[in-house]
Length: 281
Image (cartoon, rainbow, N blue to C red; front, side, top):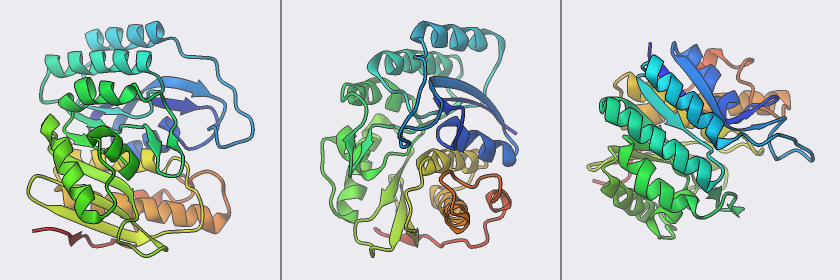
């Protein structure tokens, strides 16, 4: 069991941010310490939402005081929202890694998506590049975010692999690219695990729904399996298989939020394991 410090968005209702990541980590046997970067009634995909701003100085106090009293084994960061919060989190992650370089840090660089562009200020790109990624063991960008972080526009699987390897200049051990559609059929979606020596693609059926929080879920699952000592390909296989099972259950029930509770058995034992295939030598 690991003690995981999770720094990302929080909603009162719904399954995004902490709502998508904490329960799966706990179901797999880990303790999760939740620090919110933003607090909303619900995610912004609904017609209305509300949330008072979380003051960066309050987050700083939480993180600094926790750092003095408790020792975590791993760090997970997701949505940071704006440059001030990103800078603060980067400083605190750097301090935690400085205290214990063996702490595992997974950075989910939440910046935007292909169909929507940036949904955070573009200034965050440099904060990720200069301060967050250099401390991380694994990063989980989608294709749009990978392009933003590397200054590229990858349009093929080979270009995605090349861009992921460029991102490894920050001394990342693994880059797992989410929501890959390049080279796949319209009813397929992929998770691409790239290391310095291999690239493995896990393809699952693409269901006709927008699964808000799926990226947060996948990042949490990848961290859990990384902590178990699994290879990048094995971690991607299990994360993609579980995410597909949860999304399929959500679609079957006609829900708007991920069916994490209803489909929780799949977190431990997914009904189908989708085998990775090597996409380069």
